[in-house]
Structures are given as C-alpha cells and as structure tokens.
Image (cartoon, rainbow over all chains, first blue to last red; front, top):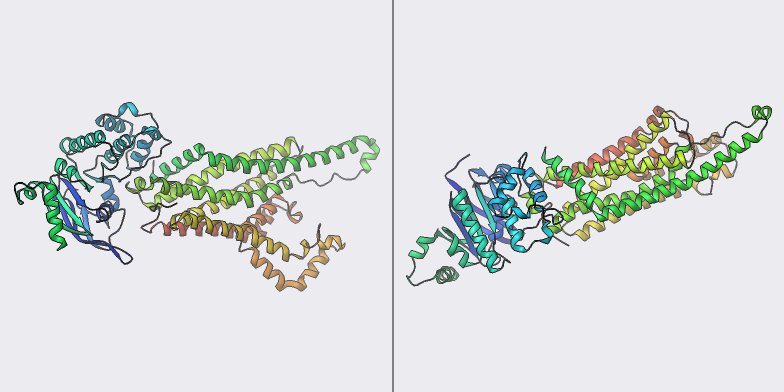
Length: 246
Length: 324
C-alpha cells in the first residue's frame, strides 16, 4: 500500500489518568524524510513514538503510517515500520544470529538466514554473527538494534533517542548509519532526540514538542532561513521555546 | 511456521537453558522419584516375603495356601501425586511467572510487541511452550517412576495399568498447565511483580493447602489414623448407612473441596491409579463415570483461566510495563 504521507497524525491526545502526555498533536512526514522530534525530557516524545508504533493507543485522534490506520490496522503498521527503543534490550544469552532469527521469524520472514547476513553485512557487523549479545558494548547493541529494526525491510524507521548513552565514536557511527538507511535504502526516519546537534546533522524536518503540545514543525532549511542569519539551531530552538512560554 | 509456534519453541529453548528451571525440575523430580523408590522398595520386600513363603510350602500346602495378596503397584505413586499437587503447582506457578516477568524486566517485550504479531499470539505461544515443557518433564518423571515400580518394587503392570498411568499423566499435565497459565494471567495484569507473587502465593496456599486441609479435617473417616470406621470395626456397608445421616454435612464438605482444582486433580488421579481402595479393581469406564464431573471441572477451570488470560492480553499495558 502506498500513500502520499509516510506518517500522518491528526489531533492525537493521550491522557494517563489526570495527566495529559500529548495534547492535540498533528503532524505529517513525507516519504524519504528524516524527521527529528525535539523536546525536553518529559515533553511527550516517547509517547508520540509509542502511539505511532502502535505500542500505545491514543485517548483520541487518529494516525496513519504508510496509509495504515494505527488503530484499525496495527499489524500492517508494524509490518511496515521498524522500531529501535531508547534502550534496546535483547536476549543476552543468545547470539546475534539467534536474536535476529527469532525476531525475523516473528516479522514474517520464512527463511531469514540470508536476510540476516545481508543486514549484518550492511551494518558491517557480520563478524559478530555468532557472538553472544551479553558481551557487547552499548554501541554494538545499538547496531544490532538497527539490524532488528530493518530486518523486514520496513518503509519507516522509528528511533527513540538513538544516540542516548553512546560514546562520541558510537554517535558518529550511528549517525552515518542513519544517513545510509535514508539515502541508500530510502527509508523514512522518525527520530526522537533532545540533542540539537543530531537534528542539525541528520534531519530534513523538525518538530518541537513542549509539555505534550507540538509547538513547531517545518523543514530544517526553512527553519534556519526564517530566523536571524547568525542564529544557530540552539538559538532558534530557544526562541521558539521561549515564544511559547510567554 | 506460525508466530505461536515460533514463540513456543523459544519458550522451550529458554527453559532448557534456564538454571532456575533445571533446579526446580530436579528438585520436583527427585522428591517424586525418592517417594516412589521408597514405596517400591517396601512393596518389593512384601513381594519377596510372599514369594519366600510360597517357596517354603510343599506342593500340597501351596494348593491350600492363602491366595496371592492383592497388591496394586500403581498405589506406589500416591506420594508422587501429592508432591505434584503441592510442589508441582508451586513450581508451575513460578515457571509461568518467570515466562512473563523476564520479558518485562529485560525490556525484550518491547521488541516482541513491535513485531506484526498480537499479544494473544505471544501469550498463546508461551502457553503452548509451557504445555510442551510440562509434558516432557512429566513424561520423564512418570517413566522413571514406572521404572522404579518394575525394577525396585518388582511390580507387574498390565495394559490397563498403563492406560491408568496415561490418564493420570494427562491429568497432571493439565493441572500444572492451569497453574502456569494462572501465573501468566496475573503477571501480565499486575503492575508490580511483587503483587503478582503475593496474589499467586496466596492463591496457591488457599487452593493447594487450606481448602483440601479443611475438607480432610471435616471428613469423619480422617479423625483416627487408619480410618474411624475401620478402627471401630464397622463394615463398609454400615459406614455408608451411618454417613447417610450426615448428608448435608457431607454435601457441604464436598462442595468446599470441589472449589479446589488440587482436590479435584487428587480425586481423579487417586481413583484412576487405584490409590482409593474402592477403585483399584474398577474398570476404567466405571472410574470415568464416577469422576466425569471432576474431570470436566478440571478442564473447564483450565480453559476458563486460559480465556481470562486471553481477555487480559487485550489490555494495552499487558506485557509492556517494566517493574521490579
């Protein structure tokens, strides 16, 4: 199924008891974009990803991913997306291959061995195929995390704070990988981050969440163009954030 | 391969690797096998004594000798069944609990839930996996027990005995599955693992120990070791006649006991294995007729807890929370 928008969310609200985590969120992401959702801790970024990946149901509103409604077609949505949680956890007593084999089969791949090898080759990680994940660093786990997310060739990839906890080298490697996924495989990427530097280096579109409300969405180029020439993205972020505090 | 099969196979693989599983199963198996071995050894001595007595007789005396004593080797499984009732239920609960709690505490449930599968498939896969695990464990325990009866007890088992064993095996499998599914249900539903353990242990205490104990205490025949009526020299026919005067009391006692799946399982297993004197020579169809309601109740309770677990799995937060 093809649709004009990779991600479309309309008036999404999520309440937990008396707390509103997301308030009337409306956003759209075109195919092939790298969308960065910025916001402070607790702004509602993870709730947004949880809803769009069908892990949480919204209190109200609707959304489609690749044209599939998240509430009426959750299976199709999950078939067409890949998801890397903020702190990805694996079955540590299993090898990379065993972990990916299990997850690939659950993604509907019948004989996933070749696909696993292909993905690991793409990630330049094939030499770790038979190693147990328990021996891996955070950066290596994140790489396997990307691997499990793209096994079934999804069209949209959701990354929740992908560089969180990585050392500088790991951040650079992951950034290169995300760019590669977008440029070479044509994946639309939706990433949560609170790091402005990530957005500057990776994203084509940005959105800013504040206290559960999307206060800004535009392309990175337009955003930078619509503020003072000397403003850095940090300046722009605080201007937008500050304007919405008043 | 369906998603349910993939998850079931993973569950079996995890069980094989799990040290906790190995420890629990070894403990349970040893407890059962030692009890059967001890009972078999005692049974073997009786058989040896009887055979020695026979060989000491002249051919003439042998014709007049006492008829061969009625020894029912399957009754040697009595303690083993009791261990299954108590320890087996507890361990089945722990294994069901672990099956869900480890996914949640490790955070791997997020990976599962982000796949194009439903929570129901995940739960069903785990249930089928646990069923397969219990089937294999019980098959090994039963086979070893039969081995002890045949070799240590020198007992002789006929085709009918193997049929009785098979029925008791299936009953035990379903009984243990009930406890594992129950654990999955409450662990999936409860926010905190500690709450799930508390509810589980309380339920286990009430169902496995308290209710059967109250039922046993209310049984007049249990008031004196060896049986009240037997100690007073009252015949079985008179016992039934006496008990008919306490019909309401007996209905009450029975009503209480049947609320416990443990007691239901015990009744069925004891009847089919001939632990209860009344049934050790009865045909399978007679026992099945007498305990049809209990068998149906065990099946219904297990299916019911399974259906409730499936309904709980619809809940958004099922499997997802991470707690300690």
